[in-house]
Length: 259
Length: 259
Image (tube, rainbow over all chains, first blue to last red; front, side, top):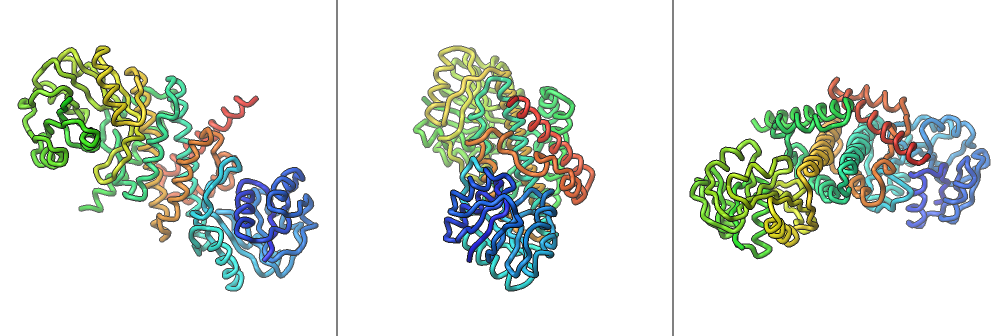
C-alpha cells in the first residue's frame, strides 16, 4: 500500500514519519511551498511536488491541510478509485466526495508540533469512511500506527474536537498565564512543572470533579477575592471568576450525584 | 528531630507519610476529629490527639489546616522555643508569631489527594522563616523530603499560589468540562487522556505560547463560532470566548517579542 501526503504542517509531518516508520511507502509529499515539501519528502524517502494537479496515483491519499484551503486544493486533485482521507477534527468527509467513491477521515487525536517528538503508539486514531472497504483499510492503518482505533460519526468527531480544544488549547493558555505571573515575580517556571504533570496524571485515577482542590472548590471567597485583586486586568479577573464558578458548579453537580 | 503534625487533611496526610518515610519521628498527629487523627497517626507510628491544647513538645510543629481555622487552633497551642510552621500558599507566617520566636512556612507546591499516591521526591518545597536558624532547619527538611528547596518571600509565595490555582485547579475544571462533553456523546473519557498528558509534557520542551495549536491560535473564527454554538449555556460560551481571547493575546505578545 503506497501513500501520498498532501500537506507538510505539524499533523502531516508526524503522520508521514509514523507511516514511514511502520513500513508504509510514502510516494509523494505535496506542499504549495516547495521547500516544505522537500524537507518532509526527504525524511520519508518520497518525491516532493508543489503542484497538486501533478499528484501521481497512490492507494491512499492523506490530505492534512489548513481547513480554509481544503476546497481549493481538492478542486485540483485528480479523481480516482483510490482512497482519499483528511485528518481534520471538524470537517465533513463529504468535501472529498468529488474525488471518487472511496473517501473518509483519519483523525489522530493529539496536539502535534514539529519541534517535539511524540509517541504515536499511544495516540487514539478516529476513522470514518464512505463505505465498508474503505473503513477496513483505514482501520488497518489506524491500528498499525496508533494506540487505539475509534469509529466516530461526524457529530461525535466534532464534539471530540471541541473537548480537545478545551482540554488542550485552553489548558495550555492557562499554563501561559501562570508563566506570566511567575516571570513577573522572578520565579522560575520550572517550579510549577511537577504540579502541571501531577494534575494531568490524576485523570488516570480520579474523576476530574473528585480530583479538584483549591480555593474555588472550598468556596474560600476570602482567598478567591484576594487572588482576583492580584490579577492585572479585567479580562484576567473575569476569566478567573468564570473558572471559579465552573468549579463550583461542577462540585455542586457531583454532590447531587452522590445524594 | 521529632515532629508534631497538626491537621489530617490531604497535605498533612502526604507530608506526614513522606517525613516518616525519610526517617523523621512523628510524635503526635492532631485532628479535631479523633477518627482522622487516629487514621493518620497509626500509619506513621505517632500518638493521636483531638485536643490541640494537649500537644506535647516536639522540635518542629507543622500546622496543615484549612485556612479559616488557623486562628482558632493557633490560640490553643502551647507556645515554646520549638519551630512552628504552616503549609499554606497564601497565609502570612506571622499568624504563628504568638507561639514563639521560631516560625515560618513549609509549603510543598503540589496538588494532594489522599486517594492518589504522589512522588514527593519531585515536589518543589518553598520555605520562609522568622530567623536564620529556623530557615536552616526548614531548608534541611525541605531538601530531605522534596525535589527542590525554594526560598520565597510572602509576595512571591502568594503569586506562586495564584499561578498554581490557574495551572492546576482551573486546568482540572477544563478536564471536567471536556469529560461532560464526551459523556453526552457516549465517547469514552480515555480517548482524551493522551492529549491531556502530551499537553502537560510539552511544558518541558516549549514555551506555552509556542506550544499553542488549534482554532484560537489560527484565528479560525469559522470553527470558533461553530464550537461556541455547540456549547450548552451562556456560562460555557462566555468562558470559551474569554479563553479564545486569552490565546490570541498571548500569540500577539509572542509575535511582538519576535519582532
